[in-house]
Amino acid sequence: MNLPAHLQTLAIETAWAAGQLLLQGASRKVNAETADDVKMQADIDSETLVREKLQASGLPIIGEELGGDASLFDSQELYWVVDPLDGTYNYLRRQPSTCVSLGLMHGSKPALGVIYNFNTDKTYFGMPGQGLYINGQKYTPAWVDRIGDACLMTGFPAAADKSPEAMQRFHQQVGQYKKIRMIGSAALALAYVSEGVADSYYEAGTNLWDVAAGLALIQAAGGFYRMVPSGKKPLNYDLWASGREAWTV
Image 1 (cartoon, rainbow, N blue to C red):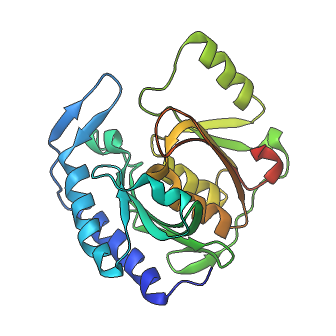
Image 2 (cartoon, helix red, strand yellow):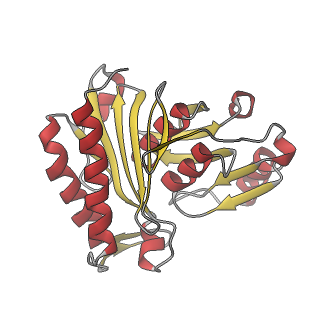
């Protein structure tokens, strides 16, 4: 899909602006907390900034904090799907695995993704069919060929089932991989797969705003994904993404 250049520029500039807000002192006030999740003022402040900037595109927006129209997924419209602070608990604890994630979707298909790791000043940008760019340079990942040599990125979303039965199923799904890594940011984990420093990503019950940008990066890099509605709530999915198509089925 050919997108106007101004949308590409707007996405990159908006991600950078949100990252600078978070890097340079957004509020670390905790607004709400549950047994397995935390919400911060920084989530609200960064999404507010992103929405203000993306308004220039005239396109609808779905965001983690301020919502949006879930029916857009079943349309043929362009719309933004944003998580301006992915890895909120990491941000609270000053762990570095946090990022800004801005995706542009065309109905159910990823059209553009920007993930900005503001801690390392590293920008991932991609559009399916047009390549992956890291800090402005075109990049080709080097995924391994054997699942027994591969690195899987994964995670447990808030309210994940951690019962013994669920853990047994999880082990069966991931046990073939050489190494398994959890960093607490689905968006950044997908960026790592697109870059080829990891080979696959799996998560049950992840939200579209966590992964929309990353899916665009995966496809831009030549990878594959499979996303199945979890049935738990709107825009919530079980996701497999990889450089190797056989590892997503």
